[in-house]
Image 1 (cartoon, rainbow, N blue to C red):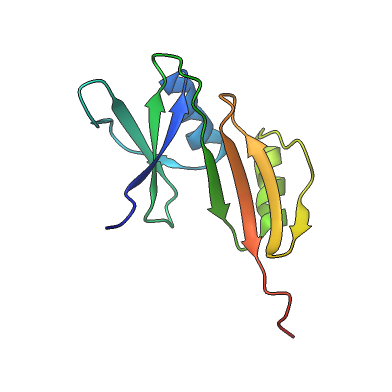
Image 2 (tube, one colour; image 1 turned 135 degrees about the vertical axis):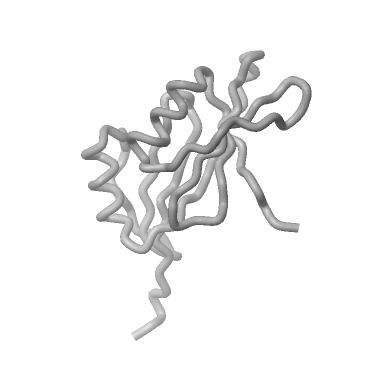
Length: 122
């Protein structure tokens, strides 16, 4: 098995699609049906095989998602995202496994940019 989609709940599908497309640079695919009650709009970065499936939280369950986005240059992506209007509560910080920066979307879903580093390499 492989992961096909990671679901992210949004309160308004159009606003969610705009956030991923305009602010984060994701490509948007055609809506698909996951089950009798759930439609999903796949969004994907052009250099990635993994898709995020935007699902509208029609019943207002309040479920939120946390997604780790791998990056080769956390600082560059942090600055580019800030320029596009993404709000970061904190500046990037160093962790034992690399550099990370956290942000949320307007629905409360959390995202972590992670530039993995091996501090033991010379």
